[in-house]
View 1: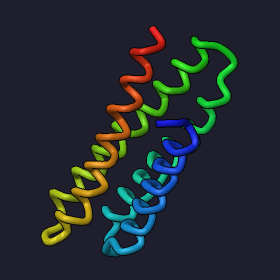
View 2: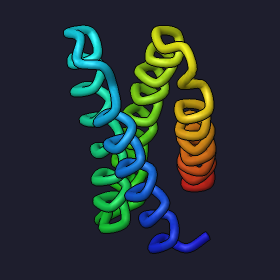
View 3: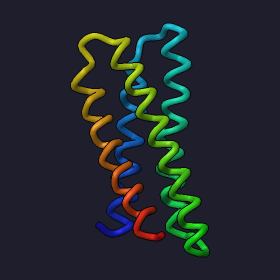
View 4: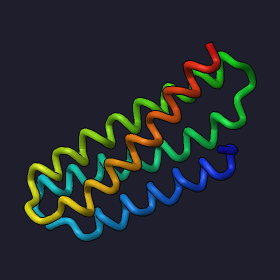
Length: 114
C-alpha cells in the first residue's frame, strides 16, 4: 500500500471518529473521552503524514512510534466508550477494527526499518 493511500485511510478513520464523537451523549465523562479520542485520532493521522517527510530512517521510526502510541491511545478510548454505551457496538467496533489494522501496518513498517 502506498503512502498516499494509507494517509487517506488515516484521514477517513479520523473523520469517522469525529463523526462518532458528535453523536455521544452530553454527560461530562463523554465530553472528556470525546476530547481525548479526537485528539489521539487526528494526531495519528497528522503524525503519519509527518512521518512521510522524515529526514532519516531514525526520524521515520521515531515519527511512526508516535503514530503507534496515538493509535493505541485511541483504542483505549474506543474500548471505554464501548463499555459505557449499550447499542453502539457496531459503530465503535468498526472504528476499533480499522484502528487495529492501521496499528498493525505501522508496527510492521517500524519493524521493516530496523
